[in-house]
Image 1: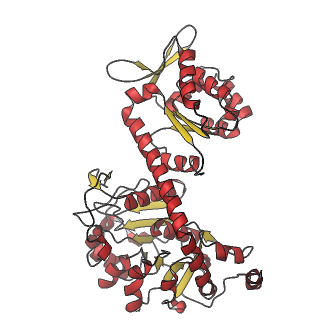
Image 2 (image 1 turned 30 degrees about the vertical axis):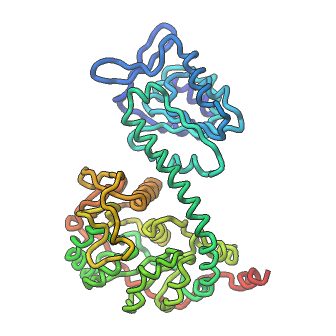
Image 3 (image 1 turned 180 degrees about the vertical axis):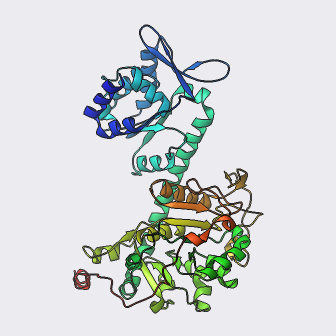
Length: 485
């Protein structure tokens, strides 16, 4: 039966065929199957008794009721979490409108039991927009991001009733991630709308400085594959790592990239840095960089092309690199067709910095001071203060697990950054991430290892970043023509 169903999938949807063919189940830990004369029944395993997913005798009737509920009101997209039997699959795929996007999410174990034991020839898989086989390793955040790409589309989500009653923990995790994704999408829409004029204005003012500074991507000529990038955040745990960071930078085994305000703490301790990343388009950016400009730090600055123009005005252009960001439509238009590489904009500079470093060849990353939560009622390392953080509330209804498995408080901004990092990490193959942040939020895909337990002798630092002559390979003639249009 398994191979018969694989052939069905191969004819109706190659992506689903590849998904099911590659989704092996070594052991059925959560679900089991009973065979009767006419059909099969899948049940949830528990200590006391078997809990069947659907009624043994009324599967078709139940399927009709569930699909009636799912498709009512004519939503643009519908999400069904749980099918449990072929009857529901057949019912929903036969009735869904061709203009409605249908997303089916099912536990991997359940779907494999169906594929291996019942005929799915009558299921119209060609009408299914996406199929997700869910287990503990599934990145639902990334999946929901893809589902909710258009803000003007209505969506209906329905969870199989038996799952709601008997798999409450899994369903709560599912709905929590889904709600957060939608909330973030709404906030992103508001931010994009309010920042649109700022991005455009900054990009226009900054364009001449983009042309007069080296592009960061030109550094890909160096071989960074055996190097490691220390991504140093400004979190309170950074204060615990000062001595170890001094030792690492003295031996010159690693590149140190402070994120945002972290450069202040490192500079105060005399810790060397290789480059500072900054890209905030708002006037608040000048608060972050004020000390950098006032003290005339020699650390190179890598700025996003849509950064606040007030910061660009104060830069030492002989000590700066630029990166083109996805929100800089002005530069992208004028430099279209030229040798340009764009970094996707993100609400957090740490995500932007990692993208840029990946593009020049880094494959190993170590997070330091990346708390993404509060530690001892602090959210910044010592010596870093801002007026706008003095009245912050250190206890909220947002709780995450720290690297030791304990509950810690966080806020929306930190939680969003954590989600973005986990999403980015999950999409990368062959890239190593380690989190050394003592007491910080657990970052999935970046296991916790204390900084003093990492052997840095295996890494090598090629050379200091040198700011050479500007040779961006941009088509300046084409840019001039664009300006005259």
